[in-house]
Amino acid sequence: MNETEFLSSLARRSSDPAISWLMKLTLDQPDLISLAAGFTDNETLPVAEVGALTTELMRDDAAGRAALQYGSTAGDPELRKLTLERVCAQDGITPSAALTADDVVITNGSQQLLYLLSEVLCDPGDIVLVEDPTYFVYLGICEALGIEATPVRLEPDGISLDELKRTLQRLKDGGALSRLKFAYLVTYFQNPTGWTTSFEKKREAFAILRHYEAAAGHPIFVLEDAGYRDLRFTGPDTPSLKSLDPANERVAYSNTYTKPFATGIKVGYGVLPRPLVRHVLRSKGNHDFGSANFNQRLIALALRSGTYDRHLPKMQAGYRRRKELMGDALKKHFPSSAQWQEANGGLYFWPELPASHDTSRDGAIFRAALDAGVLYVPGDLCFASSPLRPKPKNCMRLSFGGTPSAQIEEGIKRLGAVLRTRGL
Ligand SMILES: Cc1ncc(COP(=O)(O)O)c(C=O)c1O
Image (cartoon, rainbow, N blue to C red; front, side):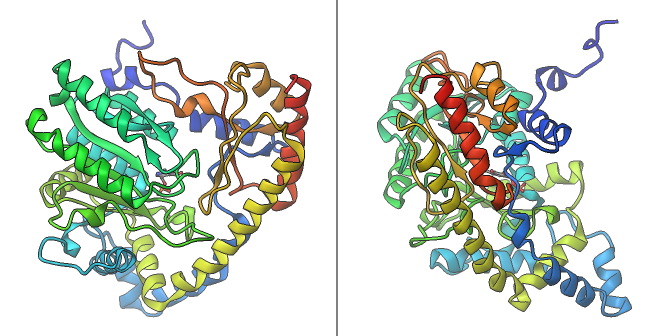
């Protein structure tokens, strides 16, 4: 029997997510220094705090039973309300008739929201604009759902507006604009580059997308992934693209309580344009009819009690330290022909090597790095396929999030040695 003849077209389109084999490599080789995982900092995980919150949640039978029972598909009402207030406070706006807690959907990490929205908006053959490079796990969703992820070059302050215009015009000229459903933009300390989109670029990109709606014949949404917004360790916050959508018509804002608090709790959320809420809830109803109620109540209590806000500066200080460790190690051990920028938040460095040096999974650098006991994310995984350019193969994503701080310099030192032996 042909191994795939019984599978759905979705399953046949799906290849092994890179995240699975990267995690497997880490687990198979326990002494490997992994600079690959987007794991969060083990050292600042709020163990004592979550212990106290759990005790409080279980303080009496009624409270405990409420937390241990199923919740609703949209999520815990208090968490939805607190989430909306938090997003509004960050953006200096106030909830309005157009933007209420009913527009907030709590999900199983923000990852689930990315999937649900893509499922609700796209048929196979539809188009989503993605940053070039982009969050590689999102490219796996596109692959499974048959979405054409169409790349638009990312610059240190956001996508190239010229390339955005050219891409939209090309789609229009080729009669493909009606297949374009949304743009997926990771606007804070982007994964993999660490770059943040400036407010000016958000405004202009949004205006450009709206300009093309008439030709598309339907709304072109934006999925703003702000998953790293709270992982800022220096500099002022930037208002969201969502704040440019006061009528709540076009921008789906996604964020998460995993990265800033505890990845293991896996609670994320979306603040969604009103016309999308019902459809996302239908789809979520089919997937799981609600995320873990206990975890949501725990996060709601963390927010209400101030535990969450007291934890943030500790977590941010932890990442700042790790970022400095990695930044210093890169300066010391990497060849000067490698280029990178230091981010003010997030989890990543994104060194770019001269174009002739291949960092991909099948390339000599990746294999030599594994032999030297160090793992990184090959940069080519983060680029969508495009007929207009070959995938760049000369970048690597290095995470300072999950690696024990004592191993960060050693990992970079080994990687630097690998690069030098390759003539860099
Ligand atoms: C850009 C981006 N978006 C979304 C996610 C999903 O995170 P979670 O499901 O833990 O909220 C991640 C995780 O690494 C990410 O890097």
